Amino acid sequence: MQSSPSKLSGSPITGDPRLRCRRSLWTAGVRELERRTLAGRRESGAFLLGHDRGKHKEIVEFVFYDDIDPDSLRTGIVRFAGNKLPLLWEHCRKRGYGVVADVHVHPLGYGQSPSDQADPVMPRAGHLAIIIPHFARRETEPGGIGVYEFLGGGKWANHTAKGPAFFQLVNP
Ligand SMILES: [Zn+2]
Image (cartoon, rainbow, N blue to C red):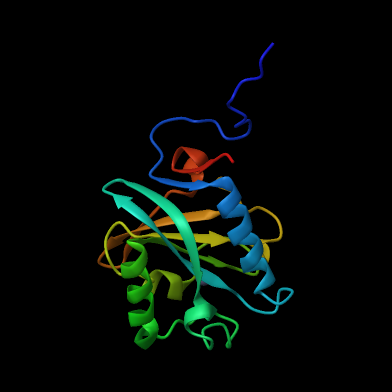
């Protein structure tokens, strides 16, 4: 008997996921985030670039904060300098991508810190912020990571519990 082309066991496809990423890209990007924590000595993070089609966003590239702003990880907490943003916009323009989300790692849990809530990386409604717990050494996939949507006016929606129904990893 021919095997099913769908090998998404553990990733039930339900509903209409808002955010998608190829699993191979996600796995490689998360592994690189873990590497950049320098064995758990600091947080790391990345802009997630891709296509924004209204309610549906697709991640196609990680741009690591420290590649654009070498000082961004120095304090241990991610602090991206706003004056480096033109470098990011130039990169996006060349590739034809937008910033659809951001991701950073935490030492422990995936809850938002007060500064995560107060300072969205992209302060515009609909922007998605992902937090990977335990320096990306344990849970790294939807269901075990924090997924938050900025609503504007200091408010956020927490989509974490929706897991792959909100953020779907697509094989391969
Ligand atoms: Zn944080």
